[in-house]
Length: 84
Image (cartoon, rainbow, N blue to C red; front, side, top):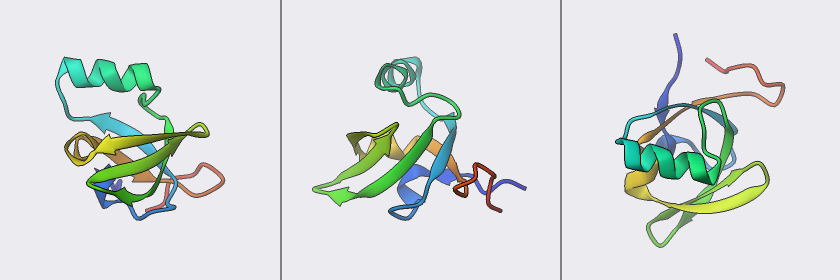
């Protein structure tokens, strides 16, 4: 069983993998343009003024909470294996 959850539920510092984006075509395209694709490794850094700060491939982004809620992730350990 996988432990999928919205990105907003992932604790800061937890390395995760994007497993799905529950959004329309416009938002999916925008996320792909930012490099947030299926199976990308993403790490939430923290929250600031209603935005979720994340790191993807060494680049930091600030995502709105509504956008981050639509990104489904699953935690991974440092070796790349899935936890849970």
